[in-house]
Length: 471
Ligand code: GLN
View (cartoon, rainbow, N blue to C red):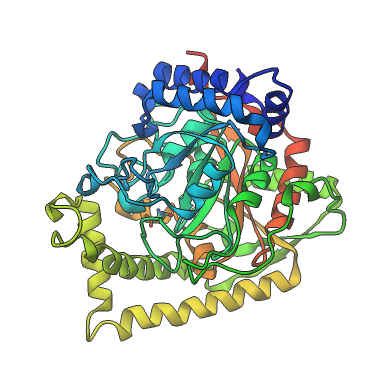
């Protein structure tokens, strides 16, 4: 299968004309036609004929571009506006929304010559971690179809894991890139808040939302990050911090780097199989010359409560624009989950309660930031689990709201502090993938990618393909 190859390999084969984009696009559609009716990784798939025509033109015009992702098929979470292409954010309110403009990140990928295959399934508005809270069909994990693929960018992780596309763009407010990457055995990067423009992302919680790449390997992520990053004068929260050639800095030794294990992340509630997998990864890092050190993050246990207070307050404000007056007709189409979130968020912001809830959460957020900064004074990166449990059975989390919220235990806190975090495959238990996250200092994506790259050179977890590909 061609799409199984890395971005670098595909690009080199395309340049040498040993393969062409038409072949790649055909492969994408074959794979989708074969298995997506069981997995539901797409909400909208572009018309094959139209996309093949686009690929033909790309093949003809190849010599005019030096972009490494030129001619590669990709998909994007349906949370991003795409001009004249339906954009639903997973909710029927926007079922017939064809945006008049495209998200900044989408434009950057398209301007680099990649070919859009379709828009990926997601929990509506990003509300969820299972891709079941979608108004389209719930998505299934390609490693075990009776289980969730994680979420909310579940559709994108499935599409990569099953090689329907070469790479995808996801979005992470409290874990939505890392969680499905972990559950589907793919690699995903939640960038530092501000690294990538959020313009054209349908907002969930504006102070937490992060745009990021999802791919088959850390090497692929590094190429994508170079293209996606940078200041955008239309997003005042985007950063001027220099964009580095991340891909050219891979392979540098990590000898002497200190990897911190935040003690609190390995306590009660973590599946022992996940804990064991991550501790096994530390042996590989030690073999590469890194040192492992235990560090503290004392208020970490409050992270998920603070996350939900802030995320729901912000979403209640962001979603008020769908009041049925200006955008999208029927607000009764909000799902039960979304209505619950709007009600809780409005409550936390209302007079008389805001001081006790919202403001207190903001103060605690500052404490978490201080603790994160202190922990990273003692080490270069933190190593942590992504989720406390293996992928749940479909329906299990919907019927257990507390378990559902606890899935974000290790990820939501990282969005609160605005840090970058790389999720990569680290092993398997009961045939299900287990990921780990490497969390860094702000704008230290370079270090995360270097560490993750060396780990993937030593291991082959990320190369394993789900059984659904053979069936
Ligand atoms: N599961 C988390 C939530 O529902 C995170 C979702 C996300 O990152 N978009 O809030």
